Length: 244
Image (cartoon, rainbow, N blue to C red; front, top):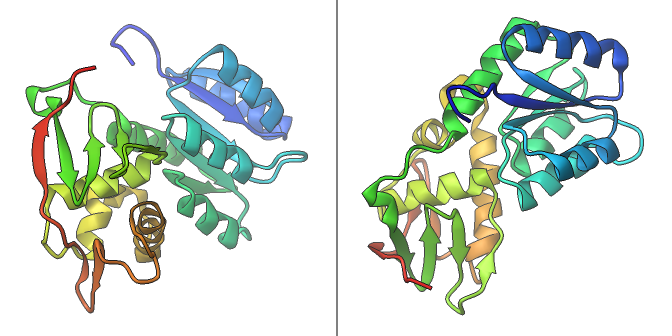
């Protein structure tokens, strides 16, 4: 995003009665809005442009929103806000588990949605590159590159990592061998304004363990501290990025 270019939002919803007036409202709030009536249409739009944020309805015919969300989290560095029906609590939880940044329950107040959009954008917008970002984290054979948002295992293979997983792992690397309770992790990873819940932290820890633990059922790196939270039980060093 720049000071001159408006923030671009991809709005994906199969209901024109909601999508079209919402797109008009968001445009009136200064956003540039792209509309897609299906996951297939969204994939086509994503092949032509890169939005700053995706508003994604969960319940759609054909490929549903959760499937598309999983694709976005795994392949694109894009924040996602899910649009969900009131009775879809399980889907909301699954969405957060796979890396969505927030959710809004239908029917919603458009002003609340705009506030959440701006909140998510503030959390996910990349800061200017600092000298400190030229360093990488190394722990127990693993390498986390903050600038490239890249995780490399001890054998040198790149491990796909979502934006939420990256933020959580970086929080642990910034505080090695320290106990981080759920409230502190929620503040560092999601932000309290997202109004999520402790289970979202537990779900993200579980996903991260599946990426970096030899046995996620018997974790050695990210340990649970009873009554306290979680701790990265490894020494972390910060060294220069290797030139290629």
